[in-house]
Image (cartoon, rainbow, N blue to C red; front, side):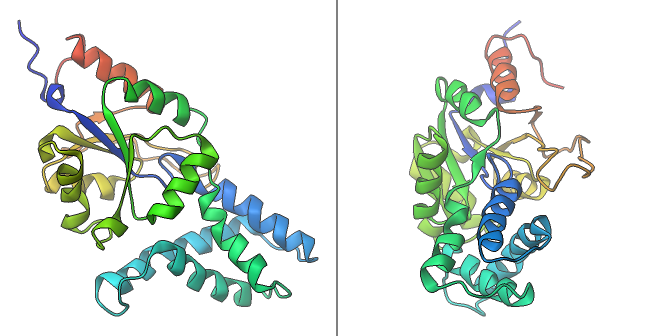
Length: 250
């Protein structure tokens, strides 16, 4: 019987980055701890990282609703950082130190499987970021962590943050394939739900430690998720099974 699995037509994989490809929480907590301790401050650095990240969505919504003109993620991160330094009573940083700290988001560590898994997937698919991070951030992060992207796609290129339609639909234009031949890979279900609503295929790769060691992970299936995997290596193996006709449609 012919293999008619719906994922056989996929030609390109686009990846959410923060939390899906890289460990933002551990990386940011490490960097702010290093800076804070050098200035003599003792704080809950994990909470600082969490609060910095928590400002991400609301700040993008200010852009999305028109309250702010187009502002890239580096600039939004800096607005949030300045407020946090004040709230955490961290003083004594000069402008260069603040800017270096703000660019900690350019220096996020990949999850242990990310580089190997992406390299395997790259053998059979075009692979790209599809992140709200700006292009410079994503390029610097890729160089820092050895992420083997074929190209870097960013909300900045269309000036629309996910989950806006323009961000997802741009993948078809930039990669030169129909939207239903592009698969969105993410650790966040809201990202996948939006991507699917615009015609993309979807892969869910939960990251149990994204929000710390005691976070409950949502492993339940959803009708907008085409495939689930434990990590990128597992995703590569499952997609290979589909191509070889060994994994059938659920």
